[in-house]
Amino acid sequence: MTDVVTIPSKVKIDGKIYNVVSIDDYTFSGCKDITGIILPNSITKFGESAFADCEKLTHIEIPEGVTYINVGAFENCTSLTSVKLPSTVSSIGNYAFRGCKSLSSIELPSNVLNIGEGAFFRNEALVTIKIPASVTTIRDNAFTFCTAMTSIEVASDNQNYASVAGVLYNKDKSILVKCPAKLSGSFAVPSTVTTISSSAFDGCEGLTSVEIPSSVTTIMKYAFRNCTNLDITIDNSESNVTVQLDAFKECKSVTWKK
Image (cartoon, rainbow, N blue to C red):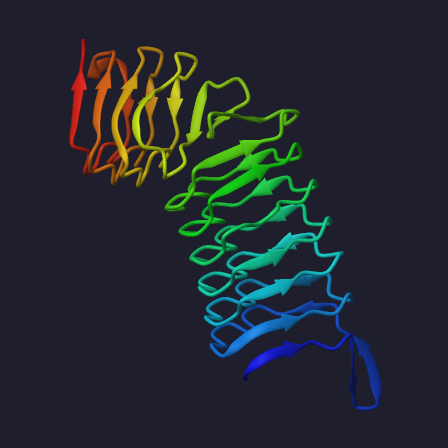
């Protein structure tokens, strides 16, 4: 299988004509020579990992009517530079675009409600992303190891999330959800924050110091993992803060002030 593949809108089998409305799990997975896929407007769904590991795939336009980008659908499509998502998409599945290291931009439609776990994990060319007002749930590691990311923006009328200086929080800013990997220098966690989410700062290698206020009572697993140049100062005692697995793994230092 090589070059550009065109999926027909109808097929004839044993003299009968059928509409092509779906693509099954793993249909094109591992087809390493495909550079493009043209989908007919009749397609409304595709299965898990349908296009995973298509290493030369550079672009795809998903037709209107598709509502769900399935689990691992484009995982490790390492040459994929652009994807056009239709306005009908309401959910992006777990690991849907994980490992798409050439994907430099993607526009989330205004109907998206859910962004799955690891959906854009290790999208190394993705510089920024805007969360539309419709989004209600962003799962763990959605943007972890997006090493070029400078900001995560949120529509001002989103009722569940907010962004301050490119850092992602829940709406009332009690949870720090994700810091973009390109943040560098010093950072002070706001005093509204009580919880620092899993992998919130994971891989922020440019950070040199973070101050955590006494308001923070929970630091979740891997929160500051792989921050190899980071000195952390916590305005509290260890007994007052729940620190989960490997929260400070590979950090330069952690200082408790009380």
